[in-house]
Length: 532
Image 1: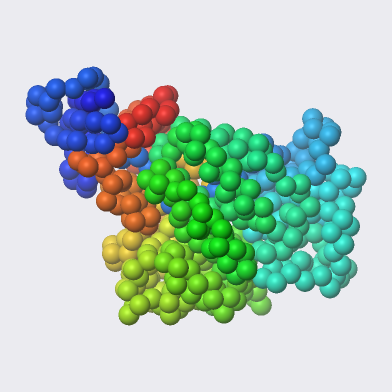
Image 2: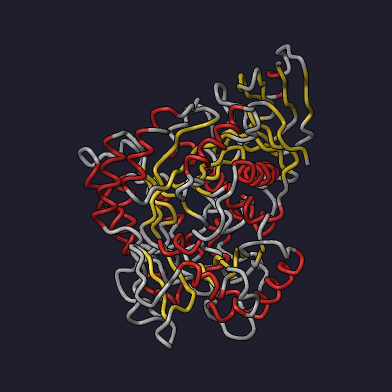
């Protein structure tokens, strides 16, 4: 079918808009002025009535299945105190008395406004229940807390160790229920594995929400534990049955090289990928943790916790061996690195595996939060792809300077600086760590203010991105990360007809209103997948 959209404000590229567009069989055939495009015969003409149209938005790093899983779990994101967490947990348990393991998601001690402002521990969770195990993930998912029953089932003792993770001890010298980094997975191992039906339910629920906020492509890390073959099979089944509403690319996480080798001998060889709608993707690794949990790996002690430098989820040698094997197989690597210590390790590792210092595989850094000026220069020089999350400032602005000091803060969260240096910068949300709504993310990129408008002057406002640059980070630059900038990320002839129609003009409204932009239609391959 040939379809013309007319009377729109169609974003083609920075400083360039058109009125009309011709789509044929899911591909853009022409863009231009109304008079020119309307001379072409077609089956249908749709009047945009002045609406703004963007290329489909592409989140370059999130966790679709976790979004859906959170929707079906005990949600703790609204908790403003430890007492709130306990109340929410008790309420959920009273309404769901048959659960074998109570899983809680999204608490954040930095949001507590009454009582103690600290990490949860087993004693807090024991007030909810000691009859069944409880596993409560912090919002970053780099710290998870279990109750006494969970520790009993696992047989955790004060000398229990986990490579690349830590089981914390309390003042009494016994485990206090706090697990971080690789130890998180050890605690989560008591949660019954989901069936394929459960995984599909989570995926489809999250997908419906994602397209409702304008996402037409996602680069998603859903392969994260030992049942990875089941997850691969489930997502492949969703693709085979035609249920995918967005374009999906894997970011498969294997922290253990034997698991990665198994993947190379199975899914990598046998998986069915068209590389247009369903893509093989990249190896995703974790080098460190999160700033909020003080598990981000720093080069110097935390400013507010002398003696603490974070957690190394992979040693430098483990990181190198995984990256070397991936590069030998022509597989892209994207590595979670938040602290400047982790970022330096990733930079050094990538440089070691590059041919003549050229980043031909477009290896990248996910997060890249705490950086020195020299690191920014090196990232730009090596053309390392960076997947930033401006929305993280919503939670982090109140803690950054206390955590790392004013001097390092000046060169951190440096979205605009690195973009202007020419590094391939894309935007993402790491959802469900934050909501996958791209317009809240763009708002933070443009304003550097929390959703309540604070701080009034913006947080280091010299790092504010322009609206166009932020949108490009969500479209053509996210496509670049996937080697797909030749067919998606722009509304130009030859590109796929992935686009979103907005309820207001994001380019002219006051920047403080960007967070309130809504999607009226999401279109993927010329097909409407969401109607507001």
